[in-house]
Amino acid sequence: MAVVRPAVESDIHEFIVLAKRFSKEAKYGMTLDIDLVVENFHGGLANPEVCWLVLEEEGEMVGFLMGVTNSPLFSRDKIGVELGWFVHPDHRNGHSAVKLMVSFEQWCKKSRCKYVTMCDIDTLQSLQPLYERRGYTLTEKSYMKEV
Image (cartoon, rainbow, N blue to C red):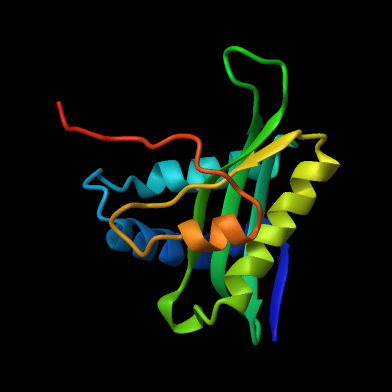
């Protein structure tokens, strides 16, 4: 049975393995900097505005969701912003990934966010049907170009 819990310092090694897989699967083209991954992981654990969640199955970390609180330039409304959400392909049965999202939404509520934003990586499977079933509305798309 899948369990979602807050990340702890000892999760770093398993997190790095998943972060590498996430980076490769997302095909962003950006260089993966493991030192920065480690720095962000440890820094995020110490920051109350950062949410680090891990998904475990049978004691093994098989997924994560990382998000932060933020406010847009034009509003004082606090928003929970998902920055990374990944579940190992062998564990994508639909329910486990949603457990991570629900836990993030709960964290956002506790953090007094008015809204939650979730990302959808265009090079992967579209998550639009899932997001819409859960009450999300498409509000923005981002494009990237190497310069």
